[in-house]
Structure formats: C-alpha cells, structure tokens
Amino acid sequence: MTAAPTLIRLVHLSDPHFGTENGDAVEAAAAAARALRPDLTIVSGDLTAEGRSQEFSAARDWLASLPQPQIVTPGNHDTPVWNLPQRLFWPFGRYRAYVGQPAAAGFLPGLTVRSLNTARGVQPRFDWSKGSIDLDAVRQAAKEMTVATKALKVFVCHHPLVEMTNAAVSGGVHRGLAAARLLAEQNIDLILSGHVHNPFSLALPWGDGKTYAVGAGTLSQRTRGTPACFLTIEAGPDTIRVAVQEWTGAGFEQGLVWALPRRRLGNYEKEEASLPLS
Image 1 (spheres, rainbow, N blue to C red):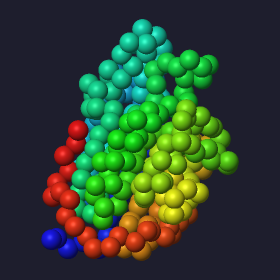
Image 2: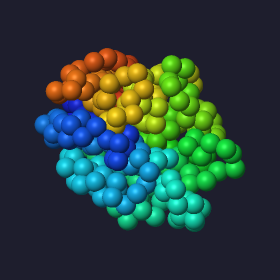
Image 3: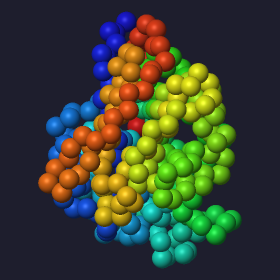
Image 4: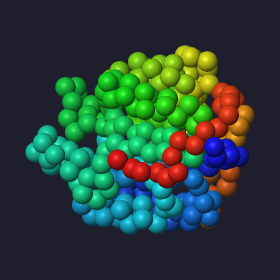
C-alpha cells in the first residue's frame, strides 16, 4: 500500500498551431510548465496550422521543451490541409512520424489517463474540421480506467464532446453526447479538450454530476475573444481546481478559476509506479 499523493498537478495546453503560433506565448508557456513541475503534461491537439512537415518539426521541438511525462493527441489541423491524397490515405502519417501514436494511455500513482483521436482526415460531410469518436474505443478506455478505482481518471481528446454555447466554433462530434454520457456514467473525472480556442468548464448532467468537461484555449495568434492561455489543474482529495493562465504580452497571469467538487476517492491503492505510454 502506497500513501495517496496529496495533490495531482496537470498542465493542459492546446492549439499552438505552429505556423501561426504566438511565439512568445508558446515559449513562455513551456517555461511556466517546467517551473510548475506537473505530474503530467497534456497537449490536446492542433499542434500545426496546416499539417506541414516544418510545422511538425517546430511542434516536436516545443514538445521536447515541455515537462515529461506527456500525453499528446492530434487535432483536425494535424492532417495535411492541402495534400488530398495524404488526407485520404495517410492523414496522420506526419503526426506519427514527428509526435507518435494518435492515442495513448498511462498510469501514475493516483492518476490514470486515456486519449483518443477525434480528428479525421476526411468525412462524409462538408466540414472536415469537426470531430468524430468511436464509441467502442470509448467503452474500452472507460473500462481500462475504472480498474484504477481510487485514481483521478482523465480522458483526453481534441474536440469537446458537448457543445459550448458561448464558443465561437462547434466541435460537432459525431456520437459526442453518447461518449460524454458513457464516460460520466463510468465516473471518469475529467474530459479534457481544445479546438474552440476558449477555455471552459462544465459539469456534465449524467451520473453523479461530478464528471467535468474542461477545455483549454489556444497558444496561437488565432484567438477568439479570449487571450492566448493554458490551464493548470490541481486535484486534491475533495476539489479539482482549474485555473486559466492568460497571456498578457509579457507573461502569464492567472485568470478565471473553477473549483470543481470531486467525487470521494476512498482509500488509495497504488495502481502503477510509472507512466507507460502506448
């Protein structure tokens, strides 16, 4: 038996869009993340603007400057925008070459995390930027996470599974509501995403009401009414504190903070001592 960590700290970054990145903000965010020494760094997609090799090369260098361990998932901009054959037959080939697998899993003491890719190269609808999710893969991820009964359970994807009424764009995830409900009913604590470029926090209406959809903003120049920003997440025994770290042009300052009631953990049991990624 291992004593429970008193606090789990996550840094959640998203949508740097290398090629249209805010250069000062992405460098400062990496420095801030290193200073925070998080238990896990999460990057929820749209590393690039157009899926070009040079953009992925810059993104890879930036990821290398962020604290380890990491969970990274692709976004809709991480497919080749203008190369239609690649979009059709090899949409995440460059992502795999420069970053790694589009889905990942891992355990830390007091934490279990899964990511799934909601981006698609092409879809049978006009707007290919919108998301889609495989419910069988969601069920499998939830099943794997529920084994770690006492851990903070975190699910990561690029597109929000539920729509934000104040967001400038829609995630439009096929089967998104069904996936969100499934995760809530399996007591997953956090569903982390990006895509809309506006930070948010929302308690989902299913299960015990203590599953939260949380979105990071952007670190690019493509802001949509809110500054470039990232999130810090600190999970204690009773509360999950989500804070927006806003770029001022000279540094990051804490903005909006959400204090989210956490479901009871009971006695902690060690699941794994390290974070293997797959």
